Image 1 (cartoon, rainbow, N blue to C red):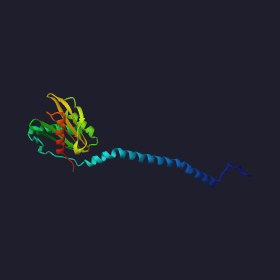
Image 2 (image 1 turned 90 degrees about the vertical axis):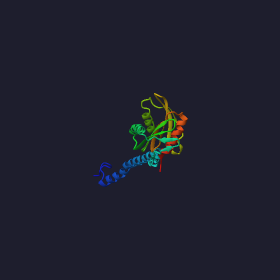
Image 3 (image 1 turned 45 degrees about the vertical axis):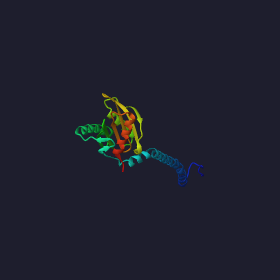
Length: 211
């Protein structure tokens, strides 16, 4: 008696059908893998475009070092105990807030006034935020720094800004710099904003060095 067609199939026929269906089920998985790999590649490319320059600058400026010359133009380094104590107090506060690896606190004076300069080195990934933190420490008891403006940075680049903070003795110019290898900030009493910016640039160029 003949078997009904299509109801019973041999084992070989079933194996052939399974082999034919297998590639169909595997194909979407391959496509998904290819799409995921492509997306990962695009994400990596975008990350390289966005963060690559910052990483390069951080590595390039990781050799930044700070010096303390005795003379910078008309300014002379004040080596007295009182000056050293004051500068170190401010330095410790800023180094803690900005998370600096190495730092210096210096007081330079000319015939009229003294300047408190604090600078430190580190791998600085976000210079603008680090400078903002340094300004906050310098003006902690006086309501912050106002009228901030960008000023020329010279060959060292990064960002440099000057503003004004209010003290018991009146308005006091404050300037700061930040790049991917260092941060510095200074109080410059007795100067107009334009004069403060020029004096601060002279100080930075004498203190900050790269190999």
